[in-house]
Length: 283
Image (tube, rainbow, N blue to C red; front, side, top):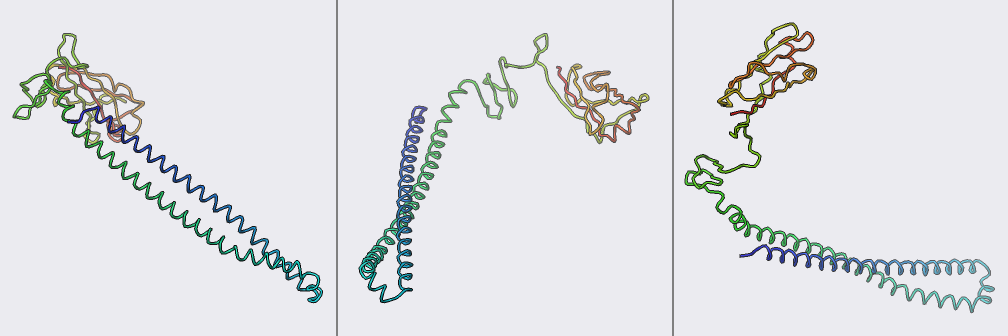
């Protein structure tokens, strides 16, 4: 069965293959660039030849505008030479055009080959990823078995035990839990949290500018009065209120909060959506 060394060797081989493929792609790109450069030089040469041809044509037309006889007498030799050069240029022009077409075809072929190589590389990379995932999946059971050997047990009822072979609950942890909350006597503590519904918070007026509310924490199931920590929530003015963190009449089943703010009324607190967030820590 594959192990971690096999996975590393496979991954290293895939990286080497990918590197070779990238080098091949770079070589192909360099070849295409050289073709483009040669094509540019040929185009510049053809442009120069065409300019010379146009110049010769204009010169011929200028001479023809004068006396035909005098022109023939004076330019018979040069004209023949120019005509010969023109004929030579015209003869070489198809060859140059054919070479240019050949460069265009080579460029198109190179681009197509580069695209094919890129597609093949992507396919190889995807296949390598698939192979790597398959290897990891094959190794996962062995890795998990090694990690959790003699540590995690699941009985026929679906109870999971960590550190115990006889779990008595859906999750039964036996032993010292790093970071577990305990009181001064070493007894484990429970943590519960809650939030009052702003639409159902029953604020009561107890003085001018002062209101109160009773918070029910019985659903947390504390056996003794826990330590309560509170904050006041709402959509306006709650940040200026006082007393939201002061706990009154705490019991295992709840506590009371008094809040004051200017000429505060219970109706205003209800309109502003005030409510109490709480956290309790205890037995």
